[in-house]
Image (cartoon, rainbow, N blue to C red):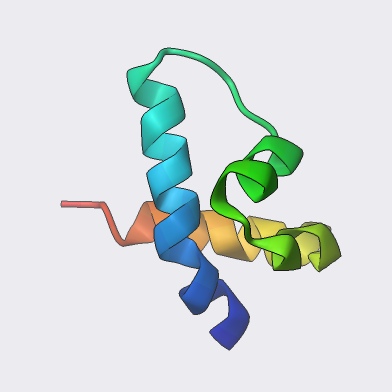
Length: 60
C-alpha cells in the first residue's frame, strides 16, 4: 500500500515519542499530533498494514 509508506515515518515518530514517554497512544492522538488527517480514513486492515510496515523497517 503506497499510502502506508507515505504515512509510516510520521506514525513511527509518534509511536517512538509515546514509547520514550512510557505511555500509550491512540490513532486519534497520532492523527492530531502529526496532522495526518488521512489516518482518520484508514480502515482496520490499512492500520494493521501501516503498523506492520512501521515495525518491519526497524527490525535488525
